[in-house]
Amino acid sequence: MARPLLVVLSFIVIASLLGFLGGFVFWTLSDLPRIKQLEEYSPLESSLVYSADNEILAELFIERRTFVPYYKIPAHVKNAFIAVEDNRFYSHRGIDFVRIFGAFLEDIKARGFVQGGSTITQQLAKMLFLKPDRSISRKLKEAALSIQIERHYTKDEIIGLYLNQTYFGTRAYGIEAAAFTYFGKTTEKLNVAEAALMAAIPKAPSVYSPFKNPAKALNRRNYAIRKMYENGFINQAQHDAALKVPLPTLYNSRRYKAPYFIDYIRSELEDKYGDKLFTSGIKIHTTLDYRLQTIAETAITNGINALAKRGRKNVQAALIAIELNTGAIKAMVGGTDFWDTQFNRVTQAKRQPGSAFKPIVYLTAFNKGMTPDDTIQDEEMSFPGRNKADVWVPRNYKRVYNGPVTIRYALSQSLNAATVYLGNSVGLTNVIDTAQKVGISSKVQPYLPSCLGASELTLMELAYAYCAMATGKRFENTAIDKIVDRDGIVLDEFNFNGEDIIDEAVVDKMHDVLGAVVREGTARKAQVLNRPVYGKTGTTDDYADAWFMGFDDNYIVGVWVGRDNHKPIGDKETGAVAALPIWIDFMSHL
Image 1 (cartoon, rainbow, N blue to C red):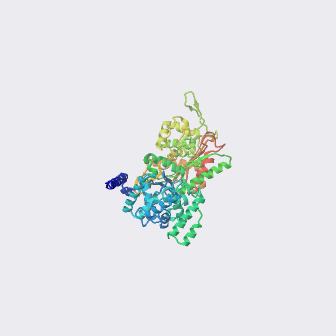
Image 2: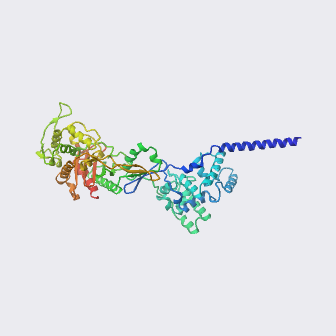
Image 3: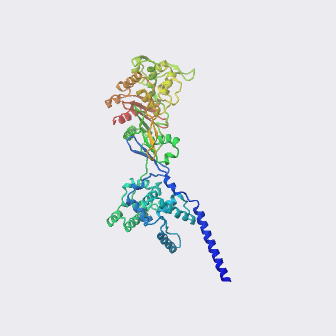
């Protein structure tokens, strides 16, 4: 009687255990994610910024990743990972029981978890769908997901997803970003030794980094090379040659090209795109011409070096070049070293433009029907100051006054007294209206010294004002041509049509007087270019700011030189001396 009872009890216990295990498995697998989600797989992917001449200027990312399709990944790259991580990858169906049993035996020998039994498919399932805990339920989910993944996707698709998802250290997510970070090349160009190092790193990126632990990285890479040979993926000659290849020693960080420009467009686009700017793999095609950008950077460097030789050290300079017929920004240098200071002196620094503002006064006069040959008075005269009791007397640079002079002569010689006389005659309110009309958004103070550039504004504002005076059109600040998503669909396309704001006859008058500045005035040095150019110098009190704003038939280029603390550059460092040579250097290469 006792024996049958024991059998019944045993049956009940076994049934209960099986029921419990079945319930546990059912509960564990009840919340599995849908494998179909992989069809909508969209990893966080870096966005790329291109110049107009198709140079990659910058990579914007939170996770540095560039997705590469599996069919563009060379066989020896895939085989390196298979040799190290899962040498039976092409024969199992998501779970490798032979590998699991071998790992189990190794763990018993070591009395601990020393070897994993996960396949590449299981690792992919864990990376995409599961938390990195070490529990039985997670392993069950991992196995179930792996079987489903293998049923729905080919082996090449699986390893492609795995390689795009894997973390390689140094903020590089995915094989393409890692290939650039470690070797400065694309995945398609990796050789056997480089592929082996890529396969060696993911197990412990900080431990096997060639930049942090070259000895450990070398041992791990050579192990990967040996496994590739043992699995028949490479021959003896390839094995021996790969072992002799040195490890990389230079970390390829993507320092921005044209960094001030990139920082400018990034801040503009962040408001519209938010985090998508850094995660959605969009391609931003800008207006910047990288050839012109390198010329601009060199011109700034040369100008600053020339100032240093004259004892003018710790001086900053900035340059912007705008295409006349489109308003597109073609070059932007916001300072001497972006990596030292990110303050952009093209877009952020508000400085007094000095005489570089004067053409706006003359434009106001031409809008009222005056001509370059009309006569105005250049003589010492007094005007009311800011307060009723104050008296202000504008003085010419050399304290010489010429009496009646033509408008053309007054601007070419940058006569202060004549300019204030003209500004007062046409009305300061009208001058301010003209400034706003041509694109000056900063406040122009309602006092006559503003006619001589006493109100602060940015280099970008003034450059677009000159663009308007040169073409008759007002353009919006234009730095981007178009934005496309990762599938090539255009998200945004930008307008390069300016608004007509100045009559053609008035534009001709502006060309006349600004050309005279070069032919016979303060910018005579620019004649070295041997082609028609137009422009105006600008210098502020105590030589704190030096400007030259000028254009030819294609580009308006503005240059500013000064110190961030507003202290003088140095005695006699006028716009013609400090800024114009930089402008000439740039224009001479066009």
